[in-house]
Image 1 (cartoon, rainbow, N blue to C red):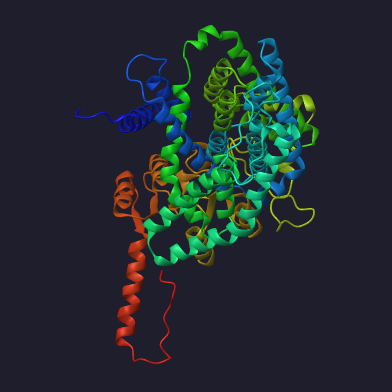
Image 2 (cartoon, helix red, strand yellow):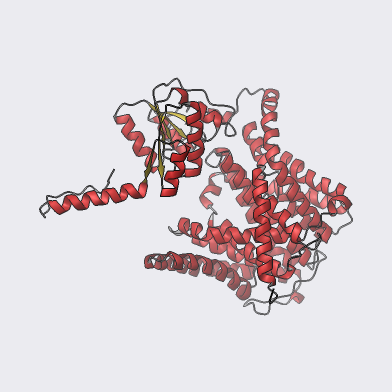
Length: 599
């Protein structure tokens, strides 16, 4: 090698090994995040072989933290939080308090200071956003009441951790760590000699000033920039503007107001989420967010000493018990206390029985402030890796426990299923819920329809297809997983199966053996491919019609057994050509009508 390139070597080794171990983790149905952490362990100083540059890895990790927090802010939904605030806010606060007390207790047994115990307990109290949302999506629970409660609970936890990131540097000196050293580049600096309340007051003044600037100036400037760049028509410039805003606001918040990079990035995302272009902003920034988030997890793994699993065996088991058992029992009892069904309580307990990215950020901050010993960071990392590995098993355990607990409680079915779904339900009418595995109680009942069409998905395309089938009086049923859509379909008298059609039990409930045709209106070609294979195996004679967005997707679906694959762009072009050729032969004048909706 002609010259030393530590940055390139660190990025290549980090991303390369993260890909290998992330793919292996995914193959064994383990969250890829575990693979990223393992990759970091392998390139870290505690294992033999290549050692990545730790200082460069930490700087890359800072960018990862900024983009992670930007993503959290971008997906922050005050509306979702307010819809479940009655349980999510008190539930999350009580559970955080209980887990923190357990962490303080374990820290006391290990001989740590109170400050170390607080940081340790807080790190164990917050669940991973990545892991929880992935678990909700895999089980199609995001749109359900259970899913909304879990996500609202997570939002409260995230907000509490953001507050902790703000206060810990200010209180470090009082809690026995390194006294706060004010950033002299800050516009609102205040010497630490003013006392603890002066330091805390200065911290809140900085945060308040930053929030005011973001709400008064940012809410006007950021959406204006996004709309201006969007009107240029340059996707490259739009992507660049999103990243420049995220990184620029985070850096400016730290330098001008003395607040953390993480808080600045969170507010940048939250302000951007109010723009109509927020969905596109999320899509455009996702690749870079994913890449640097991976480097963040790799850098965290570099700090972990695998030998601590032996030297700290009992403390690690105690830490894992707090995360998996202590937090779960607390969440379960809190949800039950609010008179929610046992099924809801169990699902939320399983969802929260792990820790992740915020725990790593808190651990690093605690070590940097000389509050948390390095042993504490090792315990948090070990607890995160083990709890993420065990999280899928937790869902299996709660599914097994649910019938037993319901029997002991004297409930044959959870009350959630008796609740009307959606605003269109009439008073006194109970919507029939066809449960999907992992979503409600068990496999849905098989339809009595035969010679029918199975319509997968009822979005923009599926709803038009369904309306045409209904008008033609052709028998059909819809497989859908969005509760609001299901409620509307049932009110309209359309037979439905709730859940993901890629699930064997859900698809079997649609009676593919007796169906005449399968219509795949979902845009995801990979998921559609699984359904095509399942349908062809169940009924070789079924007529399969699918949609695609590219020639490669058309070939993919046809190769798996689809009879007809319609590519949206091709049909749009065909419609445009039809309009052009028709209007070219028609005499000009107001009498000529052009159908703006080609088939």
